[in-house]
Image 1: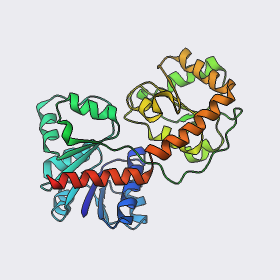
Image 2 (image 1 turned 90 degrees about the horizontal axis):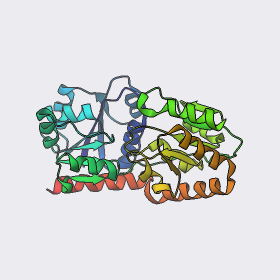
Image 3 (image 1 turned 120 degrees about the horizontal axis):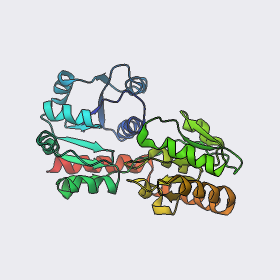
Image 4 (image 1 turned 45 degrees about the vertical axis):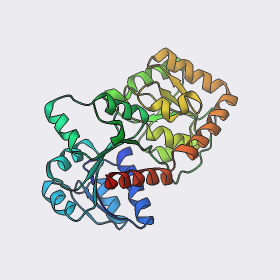
Amino acid sequence: MRILHVDTGRELRGGQRQVLLLLNGLRAAGEECTLLARASSPLFESATEAGFPVYPVGLRTLRLHSRSADLVHAHDARAHTLAALSVRAPFVVSRRVAFPLKRSLLSQWKYRQASRFLAVSRFVAAELERAGLAQNKIDVVYDGVQDVTAAVWSPTHPAVALASHDPAKGRDLIAEAARLANISVTYSNDLPNDLTRASMFLYITRAEGLGSAALFAMAMGIPVIASDVGGLPEAVGFGEAGLVTANDAPKIAAAITRLREDSSLAQTLIEQGKKRVAECFTAQRMVENTFASYRRTLAV
């Protein structure tokens, strides 16, 4: 199968990392993949280094390369717009965000053009259905995790959180909760390094499609405290593989204190987190489920 992937992201964030995992998995399975990405972006450079054919994304290049593709996969909202405007081949869209779809006529038109949607969680799939999309056009494809280094966990290590200043990500709540719980927090731009010596991972956010960073921490063996929003409870097994908390600083602080003072609970969450990732969130499972969605798209 010849698959054209389209991603317009400027950074190498969770979505772009999933694109790289997917490209590698599909190539290993013998599929032919081409990528259109923002020129000089980390994804463009990483995919080029990995030996994939990569071209600058735009209407002209998308129209040109889609002519020889069996299927086009748009990995973000802007890629979806470009595909709707220029692609004649069947195309699928990854939906990774938790916020509701816009109800404008233009948005409705755009969403009608896609052949299928790959929702990153059941929560996101439900949002697509609430917007009027047919259930039989939506597949849930969870993120995958691969090649993690096992952490050295200790309750004396600092808590770790993402170094994001996006107001939606809840850094203000983390700071206040950390003050109440009297702990230090490392705000990380390098999770693979900082999580190797962490007491917990705080994923506090006001909106989230799934939470690939939380999955990464779970795979490494770090207990997770996650907001009860979007697809995050789904990621941590609705409390079985991570503590789920309301977005309230005193409640977050209480969860931090509980985890810091109960090593038995921390060890249980560590083991359950690893188990949940192995059962639901491997890169192989993500690639297989994505390809199954491709086959359903082309069978219609």
